[in-house]
Image (cartoon, rainbow, N blue to C red; front, side, top):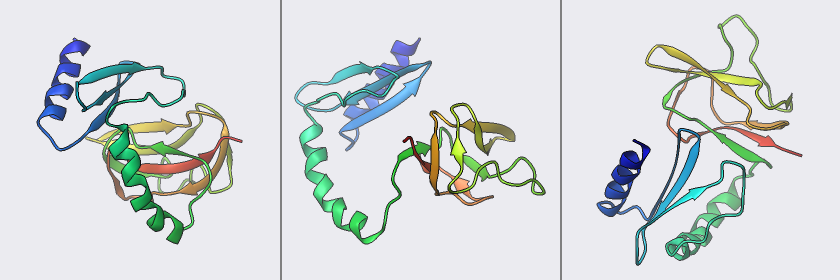
Length: 156
């Protein structure tokens, strides 16, 4: 069944202007890149070195263009925790409760950081690793998109 989903992703990639797609489903992480030949590379779930792909040159070429925008705005040190779904961001379980975490708090892997309401279902978002919250990018009650940065966590 997951092979069918992967074929759909490849079809979408072939018929779009996107050069690379990375998806996670059923505990597997896949990166599909457009180049001289289409490739689908399973990637280990644990953080590993990036997989070299033919389409990586255009991605690297675009990095210097975004560098001036990054230097104009100070960025927090750490790794981004991305939203796994679109929905509404809530910093606490009820409006009267204090937020699950604040900037500067230490978090442990598995600790609840926020809730995202999607289709009237409250989904707890947990820390993926131990660290310190260096920035909170979403505001309570705001809508969030898929893969939007919610938190920046410094793993050190």
